[in-house]
Length: 218
Ligand code: 5GP
Image: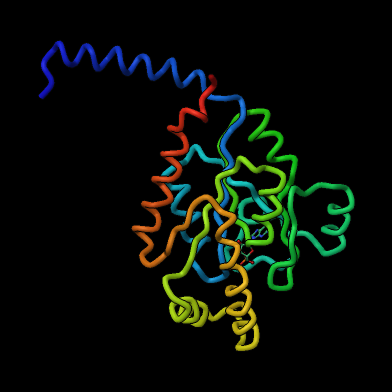
């Protein structure tokens, strides 16, 4: 138990921290979670938002039809291929890619408003092609690669998910072997062998990045 003296020194230290919080940079931190299909990034992303409700999620535009329970503007902006192509022409995306046959893209305006203007921390969950495009434009972003523990594990997960036929599954596994080669371009590697420990690792990365001196105003 802290005695009164210790407690008072703790209070002033805490007050100092409030002052330091005011010196957070105007610009927020950009976290990008990425990795092969079936690795569990979507599940991890949802859990990360439960832990950090102050993080902002960037809702992507997407040309596939909504799945059961998906909500327009919350899960995706569901658009037609023509609408998506028009948005590409109008430079509305910070990145876009064709992911398993559907167009997906991150709206640039959201990043400008939330990350740059309001200084909010943002999390993106993207395929590897998209993450690499974001890295070109935001090299200071924090890129987290989610990897499966084994190829067998990835295959089992894709089979269990059962959202694709055999040839689509083969293609995803083939793509995964290419995607994993890009992990060297990321800042962190999280092996998703257990959802709880993988989540803990992502939490630790977010907390550590938020504590970095370099991420405070000089
Ligand atoms: P799903 O169609 O199952 O929701 O998503 C399939 C894949 O698309 C996931 O790997 C997800 O990370 C990726 N994805 C979702 N939104 C975007 C985006 O805006 N850009 C890119 N490049 N990939 C995305």
